[in-house]
Amino acid sequence: MHMINNLPQSYRSVARLALSLLCETLNGYTRETPYRRCKPPNFDIDATTGFLPSQPLPKLPETFDCWETALSEAPFQVRLGADEDEEALDYRSSSAAWRANIRKVSEYFICEVPPMKLTTCQWSVIDIAPLRNDRRMLQRSHLVLAFLVHYFVHSTPPDENGDPIVVPRSLAVPLVEISQILEMAPVLTFADTVLWNWTTINPDLPVSAENIRFLNLLSGTDDEHNFYLVSARAELRGAEILRIIEDYNGIRDTGELTSISKISKDLARLAEIIAEMTEIVNSVRNVVDPHVFYFAVRPWWKGSDGDGPSSPGWIFEGVPDQDKLDLSGPSAGQSSVMHALDIFLDIDHKLEKRRFPAPSENNKKADGSFMERMRRYMPGKHRDYLENLSASSRPLRELAQRTPAVREPYNLAVKALKKFRDEHIKIACLYVVTMSRSAPLTCPVGAMMMKMERGGGGGPARGTGGNELSTLLKAGRDATARAMLEERNWGPGKSWIK
Image (cartoon, rainbow, N blue to C red; front, side):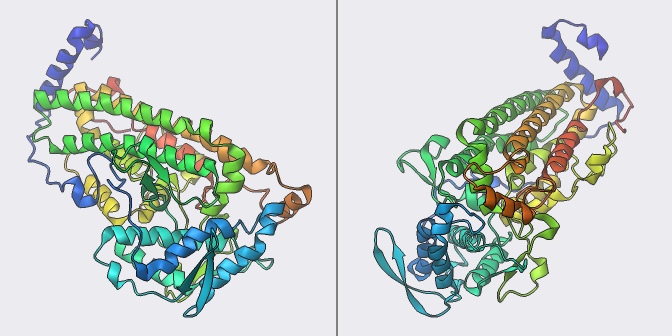
C-alpha cells in the first residue's frame, strides 16, 4: 500500500483496484448472490423526499373535528404551566379551561376559536375504526393527539407533591390504539414535529426546504419553526443517502472492477452529503436563539421521564400495561436517516465489537441502547426499513476491510460523520448544557429561586428523553471514530480485529 501512495495521483486509483481484485482472489472470495431487498416505497420512503411524505398530510374527517379544533385553539389559550412570568400567569385561567374541556367526556361544550367563532364539540373516546385503512389519516391523528397530550401535560402547573399527571382517556385511549397500528410510541415524536408537521407554501411547486412551513408550534415562536425547518432540510438532503444505500444493495457483484469503482465514487459522494448536512445543522445558530430554545421551546417536548429518574411521570387513563409505554418525547436521535447512515457504515453504538481504540470509561457509562430504543419512536415502516438494512448480506465495512480501493472513501465517509457529531456536540453544549446553567432572560429572581428549589437548577443536562446529554453524544461520536480502518494493518490474508 505504501508503494501505491508513492505513485502519481492519476495511477493510484487503478493500482488500488488491481490490488483489490488480487486480495479477493488470495482470500478465496466467492461471488455473491443478488441481495434480496424490498423497494423503498414499501417502507413509506419517497425517492425525492426520503422519510418525509411527498405531500402534506390532510386534515382529519368531520368525525374527529373535536381533536382538530382543540389543536387549533391551543396556541391561543395555553401556556407552559411551569412558567412564572407575567404573560404565562395571565393564561393560567384559559389554560385550565382548555384542559377542563378535554376532560369533559361525552358532554357538549362551547369552544371559542379566534376570531370569536363558536364551535360545538363533543369529547368522548372516539372510535378510530374509520382511520384504520388510511396510513396518512393515522399519521395525522397521531400528530394531533400527541400535540394535544403535550399541550395538556405541560400547561399543567407543577404539582407540589410531585404526583404524576393524568392524561384523560379521550386522548390516551385513541392515541395508544393508533400508535399500535403505526407501531410507534404514543407520545410526541420526531415524526410528529418534523416529518408530518408541514404544508407547502405554494402547492403548485415541488416539496423543498424553501417551499414548506410548519403548522403546529407548541411555543408559538419563530425559533421553534426554524428548528423544525433546519431538521427538515437535513432530512431532505439525506434522501440522497438513501439512494446511495439502495444502489449499493442493488449491485449484483461487489467484486467486479466496475462495481468497486462505483462504490468508491458513491462513498466519496456520501462524505460530501454528510458535510452538507453538517453545514445545515450548524445553520441553526443563525435562526434559533439558545435562550428561547431552552426556556420556551424545549420544555414542551419533554416526555414522561424528561427530568430523569425524579420525573413524576404520566398516567394514561384507561390504558392497561402503563409500564410498557414508551413516553420519552421527541429527539433528533429518532431521525431514521441518521440510523440508516449508522447501519450502512457499521457504527457500533452498543460497543459489541472489538475496535480500536477501546471505549473510555465515560463511553461505557453512556446508554448504549439509546439508539436502539429511539427506533421504537419511529413509524413502524421506517423501523422495518432499518431492520431490513441491518440484515444486508454484504456489510459495507467488511467490503472496505478487504478492498483497498474502497477503504479510503469509506474512511472519508466515517470522518465526515464523526465531524457531524463533533459539531452536534458543540450545538448541544450551546443550546442545552450552557443554558441549563443560566436563568431565563425574562424570569424574575423569585421565580428562578423557586425553579431551582424544584430541582431545575442542578444535576446533569438531559435530553428531552431524560438521558445525560453530554455523555451520550460523546459516546456516539467516539463509536463513530472507532469505525475507521487503518491501512497499515492490511494485506493479503490479514484480518482487522482490534
